[in-house]
Length: 439
Image (cartoon, rainbow, N blue to C red):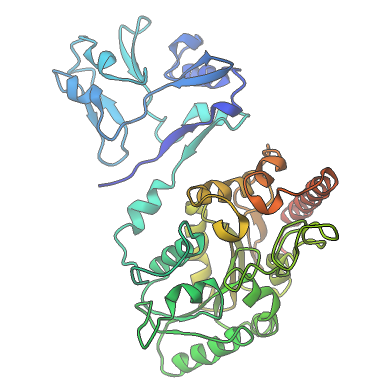
């Protein structure tokens, strides 16, 4: 079964301007909003959407007696064939979303066709209430690829790091030698227990201090043998930004042909949730407690991706599982860059245990981090410079993100203000780098 692109609606962002309706009507040849194939309806101090959802099991298709409606197997769009339609209007009864209606102006039913995957309504919405979700292509492209981690890893329920591990190795492929230092990635059994292994590729358990150095030797030995493999590390933020930074920095400076992935859950979560240099300001950890003399971490987080960019690596990027299409594009670019130089991918990974939020909220927390600009998604190469890959021009209030998990529940107004100011400063800095072009 295939997945398809879709138009998503966030009612909390809609202000009822109806610009989307005007744009839709215009692209279909009308100046009357009533002719729009998308309708925004006011309801109880909010707004609802009446539009074709391009259903997987479309009732409009099943009730059509003349087979005038059919679901396109390639695009997923439900197409209407005028030559077959008998104007019985049974399809309008079968649709529960008001997605197909009779138009008096044209004398037959009309519905959304997604403007050939370039929906005018989405482009007209300056409130980001409408978005065109195209990540279905990830499922279609990689859904049948083999999961190269074994079933039954001992991760916490809702563990985002396991999600990263499985998606990453599935995409990078079997011609990989994997290094995993101490941390959550190793702790959940990826390197195995009692003589068994947790992966289907060669994997070794490096020290926190020497991951990049060991991969350097592995990669060079394979090159001597004339064999092309991806030498890849999956390290936590402690194994990258703290204890492992010396060997990481050295390998990057030398341009070793390595793909180094930092799975950043903002602390040493595997050993009891201690703070790392990537732990954000104000966050509770077991070594930055909250009480009479402490209110969480008192320093801002180290910006590891920017530090790695200043090493002039072949490729550097930030990513999040909240935006999988962006992550997969960057994985492809990182693998390609690692064939001729050092590639560094920094993936932000919410931790349900250490951050104190429900396991069901993992993906939502990951998305909120980006939508508030707490995390910025970008990539860099020496030839093209830094480019924002998912810019957020209308960020959600940072308070929404901070309230989503318990490690910030103690924050004072002054601390929230500090975080907000830090984000504003970081956004401005990153945007200036993006505008500057290649360094």
